Amino acid sequence: MKSKVKHEDTQRARVRSGGDERGEPLVQVPGPVRQLIRTLEGAGYETWTVGGAVRDALQGIRARAEDWDLATLATPRQVQRLFERRTVPLGVEYGTTGVFGSDKVLYEVTTFRHDVITYGRKAKVAFAKTLDEDLARRDFTVNAMAWHPRRRELRDRHGGRDDLQDRILRAVGSPRKRFREDYLRVLRGLRFAGALNMKIDPDTWDGMVEAVPGLTRLSMERVREELEKVLAGPHPSRSLALYQRSGALKEILPELRNGASAEALATVDALERGDWLLRMAALLLFGMDPGDATPDRVAGLLARLRFSNADAERTGAVVRGGLTPPEGIADDPVARRRWVSRMVRPGRSSVEDILRIWKAVAEAVPDCTDPGAVDRVTTGIRRDRAVGIPTKVGDLPIAGRDLVAQGWLPGPGIGAALRSLMEAVWEDPTLNDRTTLLEMVAAMNLERPPR
Ligand code: ATP
Ligand code: MG
Image 1 (cartoon, rainbow, N blue to C red):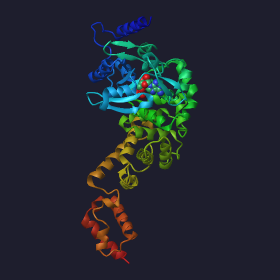
Image 2: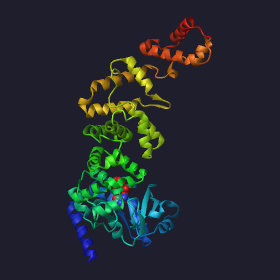
Image 3: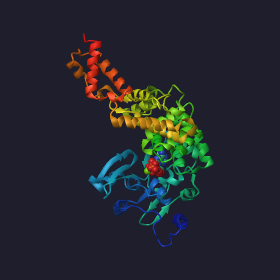
Image 4: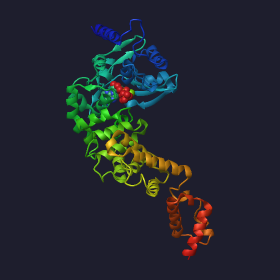
């Protein structure tokens, strides 16, 4: 009976894949991964490729090597014994051992398992004897398929392949129950539906919405990691719109009083995916009440989500720039230089980050800003940088010791004098050379001799 089901699953997969009659594999598994499976099975432990890489391969998406996950009958201890020094314990209590493949990639090898105690957070698991038990605890049907490369068999007990074909995201088993077992599945589902461009099955959607209030019980790290995965994806707007529609966004970021508007989403998409922190900054700038998005509050909010200090600080500094250039700086070089100088902080400047946000807003929300203004500010800043206009007194071609050499007493007067010279250079960049500035210092001495 069982083998008949298996056979049907395999057949259906062949037919749907189209053109498999000639015997090309449905799922192409990298050689080093097949090698690990051979070793495990040679020792008597049934082993399959599972999860995201199988799902992606079935859609013709080539997974990165490290995304290939293995599920095996071997316990972590048995995996360690088999691969010895090629292993890294990654989460032994969850059954996961890292094993270096012949390509030096660290693959996750996880013992078949089932949930024994669920808390709505990370579950307590026990090792299981069969792949099917393991697949039944997985979150969505499209994630609950396994592929055996040597047997060329797809194990698909939950209709994942049909759902993939029909672009439907569906929980494995009872949605209400599955989301209550682990609320992170709600966020994962919103991410997958957006990233894979799938419709969420109505029962699954109802289960998600019902589970939204439980999100606050998740650890902030797990929430942050999910948010980061969404924001670092190619088109976060789809997932974020689902976050918004399901109520999940308000639940995890109550500070976003205005949610994620169409303008916010378009801007987030317009920013580079590598700049996911800037995407976060844009989301906050659009969604928080004006006046709330201060560097301190933003840094505090991100610290709560367990962002690193450096990331929280960078994002806090970026929101100082707002969504559009402040009044006046597009056409007044002195105002622009004064603004740039304010955006410089020890170690790094936020100016480039801010320009990227303004540019994205100008692109994504054409009525919201004069796109010419952003270009003019950007060109002005680039030109100033090329000719060495100072943004802090340390950039001037003279320093405090030059004033001391002219008889100034060390003290705050020197800083003030340098600051006024920098302002003079902003007014007239031709003054920015050492001889001229030293002459100006001498003239200052005449007016205001040192004590
Ligand atoms: P991606 O890596 O692209 O985010 P993925 O599906 O590979 O997607 P992983 O987080 O790498 O996601 O997890 C691997 C697999 O483990 C999933 O495909 C799913 O089968 C299972 N899984 C992960 N997290 C959960 C969870 N919270 N509940 C149930 N199953 C899960
Ligand atoms: Mg994965």
